[in-house]
Image (tube, rainbow, N blue to C red):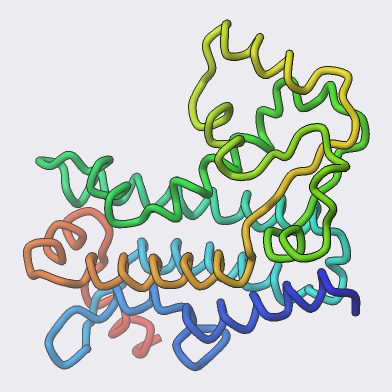
Length: 238
């Protein structure tokens, strides 16, 4: 395996250990099924399964680390899968905290998902990046230690990407970006330290699970639109 494969192997091990409950088939989002103080429930919560399915997709992708040999491909796929999880989580927050500024709450509590959105926007809407010649990709920790910074005309690190890809750009900003990138070569995109990035993703997921199981009020609100009572009793009887 090359260094990229080894990096994604490490990310896979972190994600599985921190997001799955000692069993690769059981995401910690499944805890949303179990709502009483003893951890028992006769309810089936569809949110639990839908979010668990999403984390399983991410884990399954990371588990293919032996076949991830290019950092651009690996990070693009990883970010877009995380972005799909982000969209689902934000929607759930809007349902669970309808009387609050749920968008601000989510951003404040989970800054890593804002970073994910920035990178996802970059991949979805590359803008003037399409006018560059054979740009390179480098992981932050590798870039700091092995790359000669002087050989690059433009270094597109997270601060650069956030400036131009965080939201829809106005005309003057699009023109500014085109002036920086158009017809340039020796461009490098510096993606995050993927081990640190994955640890932060896992910490945020676990924090969200705690938030969604924290109070009886939140549980009842979830229950009102996403749970079938005595679902497991029926499965057992079948």
